[in-house]
Image (cartoon, rainbow, N blue to C red; front, side, top):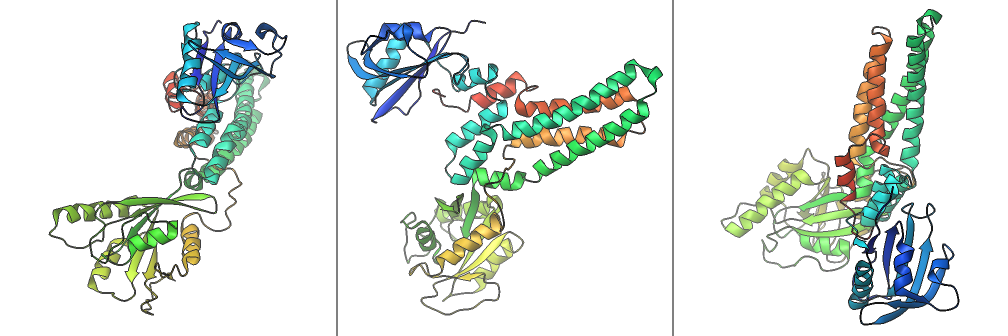
Length: 445
């Protein structure tokens, strides 16, 4: 089936050393012939695939000295013939190359259209495409690793093995129904039970990694709470090692949520420094206090900050709000006072940056945990988790009825489980799901 030529800028638009303009379709080389003048005797139409050629890129009103490379189908990212122009970075140059390709018949690509074509042409699975966007969007090493697990088809491979087991089970059931005189139903149900148990166990193992997987991919939300003037903003600045929050001796200085991020052992931690929680007649400060209370519900971990030189009734009121939450009690200002508290997990001085490494260690242990192999494979996507849950439900239903229902009824639940698994790879995903996934990509990918 013919596919029109699409084009897009694949690098960030702005001043840079190099920019890349990508084309893909039935005949991108024919467009390249009209806008690239190679140095040497090899004509564009005779370009050897996967080889970079130097020459002039001819645009409307100017030329740029750059490079061109041709990728021949099906050995390209999209599975189609593809061409890339590598020009000097810069808004005018990059837009000029794009405009020239559009004037010669290419169409501007939509969000994720290159990757969508790769999926449609069987170059990667739907889960691999999701891993690719996760890698692109990740702001932590652990997030990149989680995306790479999907991108390199590791999850898809596990799902395919499960589907193969279910396919064998369904094939045996079909054979028994087609040849009832062979009286193989007992053996079929025995094999079906073994197959279902194997797949259910595999699904359960994957589902058990989801919580850590979401943490690895999206990071950990940490709320910093306490009464006014306990040094919450100073502590945030000390942890981040730069001044993110305004610091003042005036109680109530922080009135909005101040956010900052920190990488600990490759995992991204997103901190929210909240307004000091107290009763206030100041309407603006009161709104900040309400935001702080919301942070209590949304955070994966609460840092409850005590001023070691001033602990009182206000602190007890705040502690009552968080006593049942995942928390660390942090006593600050140890440079001023040697206060001890039986609830305290760690003593620090934000001013002198004392004991911050210990605080970081505890933050990691309280959320990610100890003994976690961040190089392992985790289930990260909500969509995959939902599909696996539905598959498990159907297969457990089949397993529970294996000695009760007829083979044809048994096959219905097994096929539904197979279909749910297929949503992950894209084999049975709806057009709506596919479009939604690729809409998250930038235009050049």
